[in-house]
Amino acid sequence: MRKGAQKGKSHSKRPVNPSVPQWVKLTPDEVENIITGLAKKGLSKPMIGQTLRDEYGVPLSRSLLGKTVSQVMTERGIERRVPDDLQALIDHSNQTAKHLEQHPADRASLRGLEITESKIHRLSKYYRRVGVLPKDWKYAPKAATFS
Image (cartoon, rainbow, N blue to C red; front, side, top):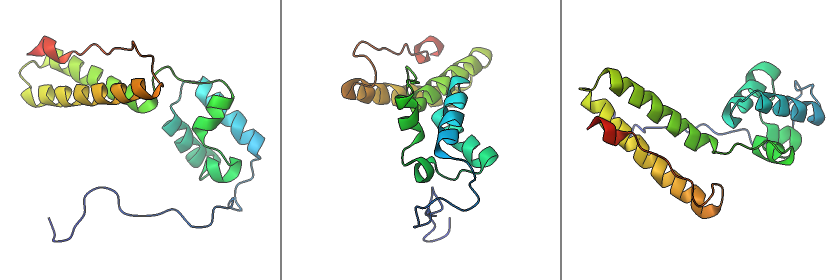
């Protein structure tokens, strides 16, 4: 690794001007309807933002609507039971567990599963504390079945 090289993001920043770009021809109501339709199809919040950007040319919903995709979904009464970041970790854990059923000797994947499940427990503890998840919400780990 080069001296001074950084890991992670490329340190790029969004433009300072928060106004709506000229190429966006959609009205705020149309964008809210698109968000609602995509959410009802089952897309996650990050995927909705990516679809808005790639298919509809909306760079940021916040600059056009004055609110985020999450806020629009909350206003329209469309909320997921489990937050998107936690759901992504659970999906990853399930895929890794399925892999380990076919390849039980894969110790690196077992370690990765343990790390992922640790992240799930930490994140769910946070979400239970702030009230996003019910206090009695539990995640059943699968790492113990492969040891």
